[in-house]
Image (cartoon, rainbow over all chains, first blue to last red; front, top):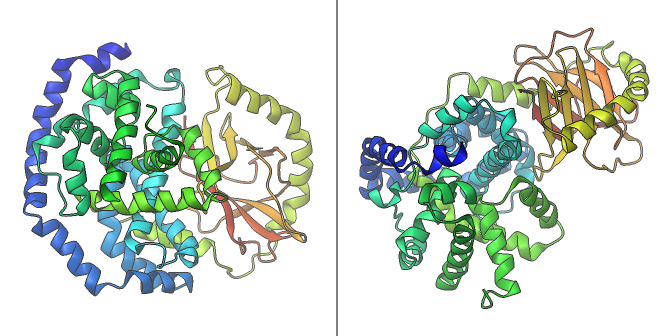
Length: 225
Length: 232
């Protein structure tokens, strides 16, 4: 059953084709870098994230609300891409904002960027949720549901179909990786794919995927050093 | 992979945690390690900063109109409110129930963790996570919508003069209701006779309160563990 579900190249082709229109719009947002990232950086200069977190730590609801208005949609996008379940994604964003609220006092601007901190909270909640779900035995799932879940996951292999670059130094290091390995890394980060799912999507053996990712991380770190 | 040394291993592990490829158990183990391994924590933060820009590859998705009101309601729960006497007077009853339920809970825990596909699979399940590090501390499971069991996954240190109080709140309730004090490391089984039947997404949390329970009948202390019911 599993093999049939994942290794069918027909299915994968279908997924990629269906994915293209979506990626086209995504590509225009990103290659035009401009719209997506410029807006972010403009906001970053206007919006004082550190101060907002400090106000959250003092118990000011307005501060959290401002943060939600600014980042809620972006956070939901990131979480939805990982968990692929709208209800669960909203639950996680709810929990993430509650976490941000409760942990705001522990945020230390000396140790990192506030936006990174905020999104990391949401990503780790999302990753915990899907990895917990992965852990459940197959029999706990309705196979039809899984099938549906798979068809709603059009991200496979499509990373080279659009410009994934963000204008950061990391881009250059990712470019030095072979396309297939770079794709594994980005698939994992953006789509929350596990080793096994990446293996299914790429057709590479599980052990190979694990080694690729580990080696890629070592090389990325060397490159950034 | 002889050229990948131990130092690289730590950074690669941190990288895998941030990428998200680790299994649930590996993630839990790493989260627990973060607190006592500052080098690993630094490595995690470094990867988070490196990969953060790639979140821009994802299109924003406007949340439903209900999400912010829901967050705001949850914020309200963690702050002291007007006293509502009578709620926590049930504590004694719950304590008694805790003793009775212990044996059954141990069996259920064994079923849950050793034979997950057993027919006794609960109808609802909640994993209660520590907000600070997202580690799972307790599991609530319910074989039906009237009876729940709270099962510890480990031990938990409660400071002198303090106690863990167990709360629940369904989406459309005005306020959380106390389910009584719980002993760290002890399972507890509760009948929800006085409450509406358990529903999907119902919130459960454990807060740190005075040894005699919250003086207001509502959570006043920090949330130690929190989670929502998922229908299985």
